[in-house]
Length: 216
Image (cartoon, rainbow, N blue to C red; front, side, top):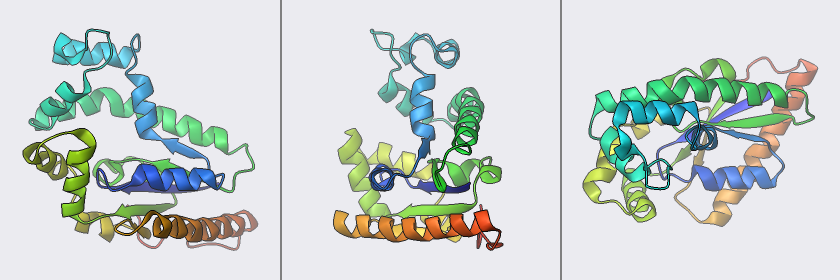
């Protein structure tokens, strides 16, 4: 099965793009969704987070204190690396399992959504092409501050922790420009869906040898 690795900067519109692909019947393996499942109360990953960061990492109801943790990890590379060490191996294991399960379905291709796809480099063996949702940095900052209710300094710190826009685009096999309207975004998704379906069909018949142009 053809697997498309979808990524992009924070607040670039990945969720909206995924929604449009899902409406076309495309199965989606989303590492953000997996991550949220892993940190639910009672999960081993949450217990490890509390052991490392302390009980400030929990809200009174036992849920993960995301705003507190976000501020902590984006002000310290060491703390961010500690959180990644707890979560990322578990996320990769589950993502691989979900993709393998999809191989037994009739789906021609699937999306693997990884916000830090290029930062980690560990998902490359699982994907055939890299799809970037692209947005300029100023628009990212504005959307991020509005979405998460954070100030400019914190938003800039989050963007600095990710690879640059130029680095993302340099690794792209396909790019969706999200600077326009939702109608244009949906049309771009539809065009790519048709292309991916065709590539998947060629892959099944053995007539497609060059799945990727650049790689990650």
